[in-house]
Length: 267
Image (cartoon, rainbow, N blue to C red; front, top):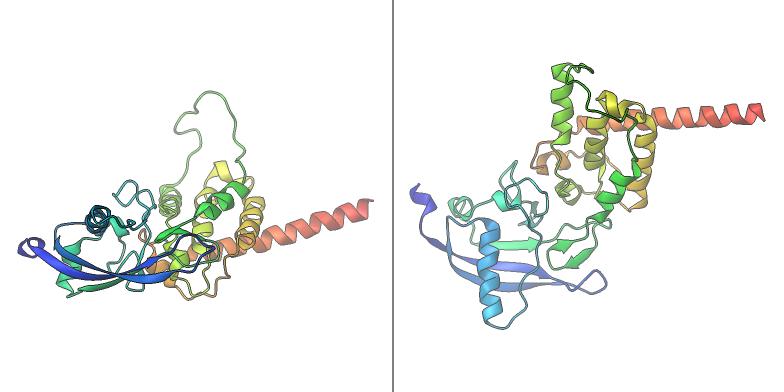
């Protein structure tokens, strides 16, 4: 616990940019007497308080729950999305961990991808993720009173695997880490947990075709299996989900062409 106490001095190089239509640049700040027990976002809070007191514009960054659940926080820290600690969101990173590694100079950047236009400084517009999910549409399920819990038995291994995919918090670190700025891991995870369950199986192939098409329309790059997305994911989503998404997409395209061919023969 001794390493958690005391303070540290930092040199910050923060990307400042007023929207995607303007040029950005790194601005240097001295962050002095930062408590080692502070989280990374609390460190930025301290810096912003000093900037506001000096009459300067505070650093804009996304945050919400600060518990590693919401997926809002997203900063590239010294070239690594969410920072150097694996399986950790930016809000879960603490300064004593950086002090332990001897880090005293930090470069802060936003997620960089065509599908994530910069709103301001370290904030990006991730509504493209919402549009990908919305493109999947709804699931077919009987409405009415709640069914009995055992009415649709699901083997535990299947339920566990679906939950693994559902752990995706949509933070976008996978995109930021990918050399191609691909959103394949995010899209595959959102497709995967529904594909395994009976409620989402009926529209499985159609959903895959729609969401992958929307992903491409948003300007994200293609997956070339670098694996950086899995490394950067704070929830350890496996790239195996991308393989399943690709298989379902091929099935969807073949089925779609067969239907077109049948309609043409019928006419």
